[in-house]
Amino acid sequence: MRRLSATGDALADAVAMRIDRRRPSRMMDEVHYLAKTEIGVYQELIDHLWSIPDWVDWQLIDRAQKLQNVFNHARTLAILTGSLIEGYCQNRASVALVTSGHLNQEVVRRVYETNQLIHSTTQAGCLQPGASGHRALAEIRLSNALMRKSLVTRDWYGRHKSPPLSQLDMAYDILEFSHIAKIGMQRLGIEFDAHDQQAIHHFWRYCGHLYGLDEDLLTNTLEQESQLHQTLSQRQETVDKAHQLLAKNTLQCIASHGLVKLPADLILACSRLCLSPARADELGLPQNRGWRRTTHFYRTANRSATFLHYRIPGMSLVNSRLNRYVSQNIVLPRPPLEHKPPFKK
Image 1 (spheres, rainbow, N blue to C red):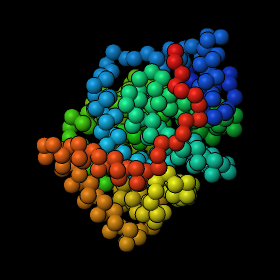
Image 2 (cartoon, one colour):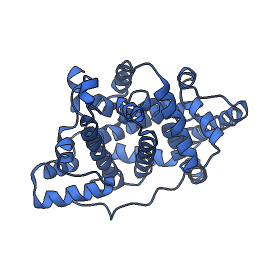
Image 3 (cartoon, rainbow, N blue to C red):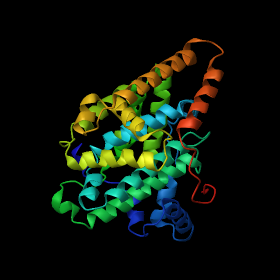
Image 4 (cartoon, rainbow, N blue to C red):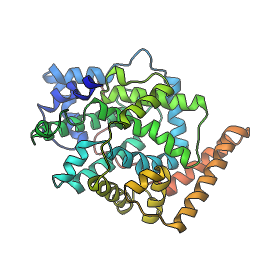
Protein backbone atom coordinates (compact mmCIF):
# COMPACT_ATOMS: atom_id res chain seq x y z
CA MET A 1 0.00 0.00 0.00
CA ARG A 2 2.88 2.38 0.75
CA ARG A 3 4.39 1.67 -2.66
CA LEU A 4 1.10 2.23 -4.47
CA SER A 5 0.32 5.41 -2.52
CA ALA A 6 3.63 6.85 -3.78
CA THR A 7 3.04 5.81 -7.40
CA GLY A 8 1.17 7.55 -10.17
CA ASP A 9 0.66 6.41 -13.76
CA ALA A 10 4.19 6.42 -15.18
CA LEU A 11 3.16 5.74 -18.75
CA ALA A 12 0.48 8.44 -18.97
CA ASP A 13 2.63 10.86 -16.96
CA ALA A 14 5.49 10.50 -19.47
CA VAL A 15 3.08 11.42 -22.28
CA ALA A 16 1.60 14.31 -20.29
CA MET A 17 5.04 15.87 -19.91
CA ARG A 18 5.21 16.30 -23.69
CA ILE A 19 1.73 17.65 -24.56
CA ASP A 20 -0.43 20.61 -23.53
CA ARG A 21 -3.86 20.46 -21.92
CA ARG A 22 -6.75 20.53 -24.38
CA ARG A 23 -10.06 18.75 -24.59
CA PRO A 24 -9.42 15.09 -23.68
CA SER A 25 -10.50 13.88 -27.12
CA ARG A 26 -8.07 16.20 -28.87
CA MET A 27 -5.25 15.15 -26.58
CA MET A 28 -5.82 11.49 -27.43
CA ASP A 29 -5.92 12.35 -31.15
CA GLU A 30 -2.57 14.07 -30.69
CA VAL A 31 -1.14 11.04 -28.87
CA HIS A 32 -2.31 8.77 -31.66
CA TYR A 33 -0.76 11.06 -34.28
CA LEU A 34 2.55 11.35 -32.42
CA ALA A 35 2.65 7.57 -31.93
CA LYS A 36 2.83 7.25 -35.72
CA THR A 37 5.52 9.89 -36.17
CA GLU A 38 7.73 9.84 -33.06
CA ILE A 39 6.93 6.44 -31.52
CA GLY A 40 8.59 6.49 -28.02
CA VAL A 41 6.26 6.96 -25.04
CA TYR A 42 3.26 7.69 -27.28
CA GLN A 43 3.45 4.29 -28.90
CA GLU A 44 4.02 2.65 -25.51
CA LEU A 45 0.75 4.14 -24.24
CA ILE A 46 -1.13 3.05 -27.37
CA ASP A 47 0.35 -0.46 -27.10
CA HIS A 48 -0.76 -0.71 -23.48
CA LEU A 49 -4.29 0.42 -24.33
CA TRP A 50 -4.53 -2.14 -27.13
CA SER A 51 -3.06 -5.02 -25.11
CA ILE A 52 -5.76 -7.42 -23.94
CA PRO A 53 -4.82 -9.46 -20.83
CA ASP A 54 -5.25 -13.23 -21.00
CA TRP A 55 -7.83 -13.14 -18.20
CA VAL A 56 -10.34 -10.98 -20.11
CA ASP A 57 -13.64 -12.81 -20.71
CA TRP A 58 -15.62 -11.01 -23.42
CA GLN A 59 -18.79 -12.94 -22.67
CA LEU A 60 -18.82 -11.59 -19.11
CA ILE A 61 -18.03 -8.10 -20.37
CA ASP A 62 -20.89 -8.21 -22.90
CA ARG A 63 -23.26 -9.48 -20.19
CA ALA A 64 -22.27 -6.63 -17.87
CA GLN A 65 -22.66 -4.05 -20.64
CA LYS A 66 -26.21 -5.22 -21.35
CA LEU A 67 -27.13 -5.13 -17.65
CA GLN A 68 -25.73 -1.64 -17.24
CA ASN A 69 -27.66 -0.52 -20.30
CA VAL A 70 -30.97 -2.01 -19.10
CA PHE A 71 -30.73 -0.49 -15.62
CA ASN A 72 -28.98 2.68 -16.76
CA HIS A 73 -31.40 5.05 -14.96
CA ALA A 74 -30.65 3.63 -11.49
CA ARG A 75 -26.98 3.18 -12.32
CA THR A 76 -26.66 6.81 -13.40
CA LEU A 77 -28.37 8.06 -10.24
CA ALA A 78 -26.24 5.78 -8.06
CA ILE A 79 -22.99 7.03 -9.62
CA LEU A 80 -23.74 10.74 -10.04
CA THR A 81 -25.56 11.28 -6.72
CA GLY A 82 -23.80 8.62 -4.64
CA SER A 83 -20.45 7.29 -5.88
CA LEU A 84 -19.21 10.65 -7.13
CA ILE A 85 -20.03 12.34 -3.82
CA GLU A 86 -18.40 9.51 -1.87
CA GLY A 87 -15.31 9.77 -4.06
CA TYR A 88 -14.88 13.45 -3.24
CA CYS A 89 -14.40 12.46 0.41
CA GLN A 90 -11.34 10.46 -0.68
CA ASN A 91 -9.86 12.56 -3.48
CA ARG A 92 -7.33 14.97 -2.00
CA ALA A 93 -6.56 16.40 -5.43
CA SER A 94 -10.16 17.62 -5.80
CA VAL A 95 -10.09 19.21 -2.36
CA ALA A 96 -6.77 20.88 -3.20
CA LEU A 97 -8.27 22.41 -6.34
CA VAL A 98 -11.28 23.67 -4.40
CA THR A 99 -9.15 25.28 -1.70
CA SER A 100 -7.07 26.98 -4.41
CA GLY A 101 -10.16 28.58 -5.97
CA HIS A 102 -11.03 26.10 -8.74
CA LEU A 103 -14.34 24.86 -7.33
CA ASN A 104 -16.59 25.39 -10.37
CA GLN A 105 -13.95 24.21 -12.83
CA GLU A 106 -13.27 21.01 -10.88
CA VAL A 107 -16.93 20.16 -10.33
CA VAL A 108 -17.95 20.67 -13.97
CA ARG A 109 -14.94 18.72 -15.26
CA ARG A 110 -15.51 15.80 -12.92
CA VAL A 111 -19.27 15.61 -13.51
CA TYR A 112 -18.97 15.70 -17.29
CA GLU A 113 -16.16 13.11 -17.36
CA THR A 114 -18.29 10.84 -15.19
CA ASN A 115 -21.37 11.36 -17.36
CA GLN A 116 -19.36 10.68 -20.52
CA LEU A 117 -17.98 7.43 -19.09
CA ILE A 118 -21.42 6.27 -17.89
CA HIS A 119 -22.92 6.65 -21.35
CA SER A 120 -19.85 5.36 -23.16
CA THR A 121 -19.97 2.07 -21.24
CA THR A 122 -23.56 1.27 -22.24
CA GLN A 123 -22.76 0.82 -25.93
CA ALA A 124 -22.44 -2.68 -27.40
CA GLY A 125 -18.78 -3.69 -27.66
CA CYS A 126 -17.81 -0.54 -25.77
CA LEU A 127 -14.51 -1.91 -24.41
CA GLN A 128 -13.21 -3.28 -27.70
CA PRO A 129 -10.04 -1.39 -28.74
CA GLY A 130 -11.02 2.00 -30.14
CA ALA A 131 -14.70 1.77 -29.12
CA SER A 132 -16.57 4.37 -27.04
CA GLY A 133 -15.81 3.10 -23.52
CA HIS A 134 -12.25 2.16 -24.41
CA ARG A 135 -11.59 5.67 -25.70
CA ALA A 136 -13.36 7.40 -22.79
CA LEU A 137 -11.15 5.57 -20.27
CA ALA A 138 -8.03 6.52 -22.23
CA GLU A 139 -9.10 10.17 -22.33
CA ILE A 140 -9.81 10.34 -18.58
CA ARG A 141 -6.52 8.58 -17.88
CA LEU A 142 -4.64 11.22 -19.85
CA SER A 143 -6.67 14.00 -18.23
CA ASN A 144 -5.62 12.67 -14.82
CA ALA A 145 -1.99 12.74 -15.90
CA LEU A 146 -2.33 16.38 -16.96
CA MET A 147 -3.89 17.18 -13.58
CA ARG A 148 -0.99 15.48 -11.76
CA LYS A 149 1.41 17.52 -13.86
CA SER A 150 -0.44 20.73 -12.92
CA LEU A 151 -0.70 19.98 -9.19
CA VAL A 152 2.98 19.06 -8.88
CA THR A 153 3.90 22.54 -10.12
CA ARG A 154 1.81 24.00 -7.27
CA ASP A 155 4.09 22.68 -4.52
CA TRP A 156 1.98 19.58 -3.95
CA TYR A 157 4.91 17.63 -2.49
CA GLY A 158 5.57 20.44 -0.05
CA ARG A 159 2.17 19.81 1.58
CA HIS A 160 1.57 16.10 0.99
CA LYS A 161 3.67 12.98 1.37
CA SER A 162 2.33 11.20 -1.71
CA PRO A 163 1.74 12.26 -5.33
CA PRO A 164 -1.64 13.63 -6.43
CA LEU A 165 -3.99 11.06 -7.98
CA SER A 166 -1.89 8.12 -6.86
CA GLN A 167 -2.62 4.51 -7.74
CA LEU A 168 -4.80 4.26 -4.63
CA ASP A 169 -6.82 7.30 -5.72
CA MET A 170 -7.24 5.80 -9.19
CA ALA A 171 -8.35 2.48 -7.67
CA TYR A 172 -11.05 4.32 -5.73
CA ASP A 173 -12.18 5.97 -8.99
CA ILE A 174 -12.87 2.53 -10.47
CA LEU A 175 -14.61 1.41 -7.26
CA GLU A 176 -16.99 4.35 -7.69
CA PHE A 177 -18.31 2.72 -10.87
CA SER A 178 -18.25 -0.87 -9.62
CA HIS A 179 -18.47 -1.66 -5.91
CA ILE A 180 -19.79 1.68 -4.63
CA ALA A 181 -22.24 1.96 -7.54
CA LYS A 182 -23.48 -1.56 -6.76
CA ILE A 183 -24.19 -0.51 -3.17
CA GLY A 184 -26.00 2.60 -4.41
CA MET A 185 -28.13 0.55 -6.79
CA GLN A 186 -29.03 -1.83 -3.98
CA ARG A 187 -30.22 1.14 -1.93
CA LEU A 188 -32.27 2.20 -4.96
CA GLY A 189 -33.90 -1.25 -5.07
CA ILE A 190 -31.86 -3.09 -7.70
CA GLU A 191 -29.77 -6.06 -6.59
CA PHE A 192 -28.17 -8.36 -9.15
CA ASP A 193 -27.61 -12.07 -8.61
CA ALA A 194 -24.12 -13.45 -7.93
CA HIS A 195 -23.35 -14.25 -11.57
CA ASP A 196 -24.34 -10.79 -12.78
CA GLN A 197 -22.37 -9.13 -9.97
CA GLN A 198 -19.32 -11.12 -11.06
CA ALA A 199 -19.83 -10.02 -14.67
CA ILE A 200 -19.97 -6.35 -13.66
CA HIS A 201 -16.89 -6.80 -11.46
CA HIS A 202 -15.02 -8.35 -14.41
CA PHE A 203 -16.13 -5.48 -16.67
CA TRP A 204 -14.66 -2.87 -14.35
CA ARG A 205 -11.56 -4.95 -13.68
CA TYR A 206 -10.72 -4.62 -17.37
CA CYS A 207 -11.64 -0.91 -17.18
CA GLY A 208 -9.09 -0.63 -14.37
CA HIS A 209 -6.43 -2.11 -16.65
CA LEU A 210 -7.23 0.46 -19.34
CA TYR A 211 -7.30 3.19 -16.68
CA GLY A 212 -3.69 2.41 -15.77
CA LEU A 213 -4.12 0.57 -12.47
CA ASP A 214 -1.30 -1.54 -11.08
CA GLU A 215 -1.94 -5.29 -11.37
CA ASP A 216 -2.02 -5.57 -7.56
CA LEU A 217 -5.14 -3.38 -7.55
CA LEU A 218 -7.02 -5.41 -10.18
CA THR A 219 -9.04 -7.61 -7.83
CA ASN A 220 -9.94 -11.15 -8.88
CA THR A 221 -13.14 -11.65 -6.87
CA LEU A 222 -16.02 -9.70 -5.37
CA GLU A 223 -14.63 -10.43 -1.90
CA GLN A 224 -11.27 -8.91 -2.80
CA GLU A 225 -13.04 -5.89 -4.27
CA SER A 226 -14.97 -5.38 -1.03
CA GLN A 227 -11.77 -5.72 1.00
CA LEU A 228 -10.02 -3.17 -1.21
CA HIS A 229 -12.89 -0.73 -0.67
CA GLN A 230 -12.67 -1.17 3.10
CA THR A 231 -8.91 -0.68 3.05
CA LEU A 232 -9.02 2.46 0.91
CA SER A 233 -11.89 3.91 2.95
CA GLN A 234 -9.65 3.84 6.02
CA ARG A 235 -7.40 6.43 4.34
CA GLN A 236 -10.19 8.99 4.41
CA GLU A 237 -9.61 12.23 6.22
CA THR A 238 -12.26 13.93 8.35
CA VAL A 239 -15.09 15.39 6.27
CA ASP A 240 -14.75 19.17 6.36
CA LYS A 241 -16.26 22.24 4.72
CA ALA A 242 -14.40 21.63 1.45
CA HIS A 243 -16.02 18.20 1.09
CA GLN A 244 -19.43 19.65 1.94
CA LEU A 245 -18.96 22.40 -0.64
CA LEU A 246 -17.95 19.86 -3.29
CA ALA A 247 -21.01 17.69 -2.57
CA LYS A 248 -23.43 20.63 -2.63
CA ASN A 249 -22.05 22.12 -5.84
CA THR A 250 -21.88 18.75 -7.58
CA LEU A 251 -25.58 18.09 -6.98
CA GLN A 252 -26.40 21.63 -8.12
CA CYS A 253 -24.32 21.11 -11.26
CA ILE A 254 -26.12 17.84 -12.07
CA ALA A 255 -29.49 19.58 -11.74
CA SER A 256 -28.62 22.87 -13.46
CA HIS A 257 -26.88 21.22 -16.42
CA GLY A 258 -29.74 18.76 -16.89
CA LEU A 259 -27.60 15.62 -16.66
CA VAL A 260 -30.47 13.97 -14.78
CA LYS A 261 -33.92 15.22 -15.73
CA LEU A 262 -35.30 15.43 -12.21
CA PRO A 263 -36.04 18.34 -9.85
CA ALA A 264 -33.05 19.51 -7.81
CA ASP A 265 -34.72 18.54 -4.51
CA LEU A 266 -35.43 15.03 -5.81
CA ILE A 267 -31.79 14.66 -6.90
CA LEU A 268 -30.79 15.64 -3.37
CA ALA A 269 -33.18 13.04 -1.92
CA CYS A 270 -31.71 10.37 -4.23
CA SER A 271 -28.24 11.32 -3.02
CA ARG A 272 -29.26 10.80 0.60
CA LEU A 273 -30.68 7.41 -0.36
CA CYS A 274 -27.56 6.30 -2.27
CA LEU A 275 -25.23 7.47 0.50
CA SER A 276 -25.43 6.10 4.01
CA PRO A 277 -27.45 8.33 6.41
CA ALA A 278 -24.27 9.00 8.41
CA ARG A 279 -22.34 10.12 5.33
CA ALA A 280 -25.21 12.32 4.11
CA ASP A 281 -25.37 14.01 7.53
CA GLU A 282 -21.58 14.54 7.55
CA LEU A 283 -21.86 16.25 4.18
CA GLY A 284 -24.72 18.42 5.41
CA LEU A 285 -27.26 17.21 2.85
CA PRO A 286 -30.73 18.28 4.10
CA GLN A 287 -33.76 15.99 4.18
CA ASN A 288 -37.00 16.66 2.36
CA ARG A 289 -39.77 14.40 3.61
CA GLY A 290 -41.96 14.94 0.55
CA TRP A 291 -39.29 13.87 -1.95
CA ARG A 292 -38.15 11.16 0.43
CA ARG A 293 -41.48 9.40 -0.10
CA THR A 294 -40.95 9.68 -3.85
CA THR A 295 -37.55 7.99 -3.63
CA HIS A 296 -39.05 5.18 -1.55
CA PHE A 297 -41.69 4.65 -4.25
CA TYR A 298 -38.92 4.58 -6.88
CA ARG A 299 -37.05 1.99 -4.82
CA THR A 300 -40.17 -0.18 -4.56
CA ALA A 301 -40.67 0.05 -8.34
CA ASN A 302 -37.07 -1.01 -8.90
CA ARG A 303 -37.50 -4.00 -6.60
CA SER A 304 -40.52 -5.08 -8.63
CA ALA A 305 -38.61 -4.64 -11.88
CA THR A 306 -35.71 -6.71 -10.56
CA PHE A 307 -38.13 -9.42 -9.45
CA LEU A 308 -39.64 -9.55 -12.94
CA HIS A 309 -36.17 -9.62 -14.48
CA TYR A 310 -35.09 -12.73 -12.57
CA ARG A 311 -38.23 -14.62 -11.54
CA ILE A 312 -40.85 -14.48 -14.31
CA PRO A 313 -39.93 -16.21 -17.60
CA GLY A 314 -40.55 -14.15 -20.70
CA MET A 315 -40.74 -10.86 -18.78
CA SER A 316 -37.08 -9.94 -19.19
CA LEU A 317 -37.69 -8.36 -22.62
CA VAL A 318 -40.68 -6.36 -21.35
CA ASN A 319 -38.66 -5.29 -18.34
CA SER A 320 -35.76 -4.24 -20.55
CA ARG A 321 -38.02 -2.05 -22.68
CA LEU A 322 -39.63 -0.53 -19.59
CA ASN A 323 -36.27 0.29 -18.03
CA ARG A 324 -35.01 1.79 -21.27
CA TYR A 325 -38.11 3.99 -21.40
CA VAL A 326 -37.48 5.13 -17.82
CA SER A 327 -33.82 5.77 -18.67
CA GLN A 328 -34.76 7.96 -21.63
CA ASN A 329 -37.04 10.06 -19.42
CA ILE A 330 -34.72 10.34 -16.40
CA VAL A 331 -31.24 10.34 -17.87
CA LEU A 332 -30.02 12.86 -20.44
CA PRO A 333 -29.09 11.20 -23.77
CA ARG A 334 -25.46 10.45 -24.40
CA PRO A 335 -23.52 13.67 -25.03
CA PRO A 336 -22.39 14.19 -28.64
CA LEU A 337 -18.84 13.12 -29.39
CA GLU A 338 -16.30 15.93 -29.48
CA HIS A 339 -14.01 14.01 -31.78
CA LYS A 340 -13.96 11.98 -34.95
CA PRO A 341 -14.95 8.29 -34.95
CA PRO A 342 -12.84 6.18 -32.54
CA PHE A 343 -9.22 6.00 -33.61
CA LYS A 344 -7.69 2.72 -34.62
CA LYS A 345 -4.23 1.45 -33.96
